[in-house]
Image 1 (cartoon, rainbow, N blue to C red):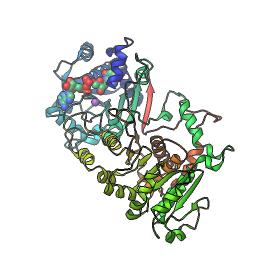
Image 2 (spheres, rainbow, N blue to C red):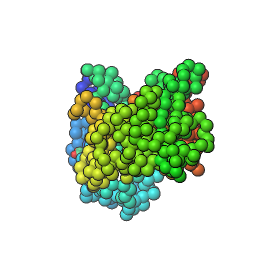
Image 3 (cartoon, rainbow, N blue to C red):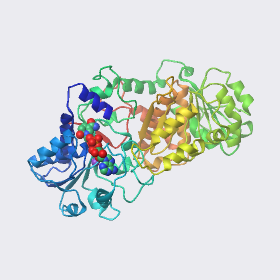
Length: 555
Ligand SMILES: NC(=O)C1=CN([C@@H]2O[C@H](COP(=O)(O)OP(=O)(O)OC[C@H]3O[C@@H](n4cnc5c(N)ncnc54)[C@H](O)[C@@H]3O)[C@@H](O)[C@H]2O)[C@@H](O)CC1
Ligand SMILES: [K+]
């Protein structure tokens, strides 16, 4: 964000003051949208530009007829924020940013948290810490504040690179400041989507402050994007009615293409799902059904001979073929039409370990999950290649990358804090495979390609609104979806990202009460509803999403 901002200001087209004015106006606009009757607002201003935004907000609300109290610090902020502070002083006074002054402001309808934003570098301490903890609720009236708190860019104390609170143990903490509404600028930051971010930010609104040309690279001197992070964003949720990008429509059309008249079933790929011994076949069958639903032309499930009988029931579209051991698998993989392999769900650690070398030696795109990950943790990463996708949950991730997992658990003492994004990128670089760390905040990273120093592309998929997806077998379905997309020819990172997205959508579409068996069926409905280039009616909807998020344009 800093790079984008700097590029914009460098271009001479906008000034820092302009951006601050737009940012403050956007937040004030959101407040007035949600609290249409002018009331009483208390704006808490910190020492930096986040505080500068606060002074702008105070001015806008005062001009709109609100009774505005500003609590601020003695510090002399940077030039832009100092100018905004000066302008506010022409309208009203600045009271001390203290707990006692906050207590006197209890008649407020809205509290604006403009204390710290993206510039937070160390744990908050002293009086401000006490004030934030009071509003967070551990020693105060958290629910009272939460319903009327609006955060500028982020709840203060939250690290925007990681979604962790600096100075606090990872995970929920009673002191965490949770707000009703967060208005952030231009783009969501990783901290909005990871760890505590989604819970603490409340409703997240991304305000457009005119930085688009510099974010996309159109406005920079060399035409390159200043940032290398690509997150999955909710194009469908854009309120200005912008149409989804053509690339997304093309992708949607591609996803739904299997059932068109063109092409032979082999053109849509053949996925192999390896299954385990008798009585363990359910997980592999879930994966196989999902691979079929996502559009693989053919899917074969491969149990050992002794377990074949278990797979004789529906779905009839599924092919069965016994695979006894690694040699048999290596023979089978001589067939070049087999485009991808899924290994792990219900396989048994021993069998997964036996079959793993044959899968890796074949060089085939593959998804390694569950028992295959346990086997991998025991034998090391040798043989992994750029077409592998590892899909660990937190426990499996800790087995595979114990040091990275430990680092993720340490109390962050300075910002930017080590994040899930950092951990997964490091895991991808170390293993040489695409790594997908599952969770409500799923992170996917692919290994850096030719540039050894460059970080690989990463994707965050935040889906905190579908807790019912945490159900037995859901991970097996994800393995199948990704295997199916790999078989259809998608590159590993894309297969993983789109796989996670479709998986989440299928769960959202079905709703509570979901079992893993319902997911493949629900996928069909999701595919049917994807807006495509040839859809008769266009609507502001597209493939990419991360709820709850709205993009709002006001300038
Ligand atoms: N991203 C954008 O495009 C824009 C960002 N703006 C605002 O600028 C903000 C970033 O501004 P800054 O970089 O000045 O950062 P902040 O305003 O977040 O805070 C930085 C200030 O706090 C101090 N500080 C950091 N950690 C501290 C701690 N634990 N205790 C006490 N002091 C601490 C720093 O030394 C610095 O003075 C954003 O969050 C946003 O609100 C807008 O003004 C304009 C547009
Ligand atoms: K803030």
